[in-house]
Image (cartoon, rainbow, N blue to C red):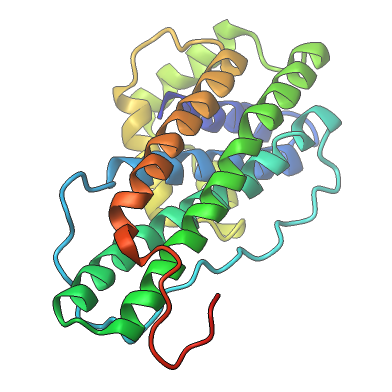
Length: 247
């Protein structure tokens, strides 16, 4: 969450800089993505889920809507856009895994062959999307970090620390809260980020180092999910229910 907090602070600084509204809005979008990722992995259950007997319903991964136009955003900041798009797909794929596993468990309990096949196939599809998106993130993060470092556009550490200290004392500035809402970002995400910014310890680690490290950590977590997949789908891998065509 340090990365989400850092991105939010940079957005506050951009907002109160000349012509910085577009940059602030883009940074808010990235901060919301980092925050959503942190919440998603924090909620991953380690224990088997409670069986869900709605196994006749398949919960597919739905691609997100196209992100907003980055017109007026400096090139170094535009490099965060692919990361935000990829993170959105990671979050959506992970959100499908738990409910699908729960329905697969219930279908096995009832020995419903058709549902077992469909839920197992859907789980594999979600893992495939997760793996593809996560594997692209370290490269996207490295490219963005390099562009950010070469631009020299990040505010000085002293200003970042001062802004964060001000948020700790006074909370999120009213103008920043208004822009967040106008950007159609979840109000509860800003509330969580504000809480994190009040708790985070100073000094913050360098932004680009945090970005690279966070994406590598995500890839390691994804590898663990992929490795676990055979134990979730079990013998249902490639299984065909009676009367259905092979996949």
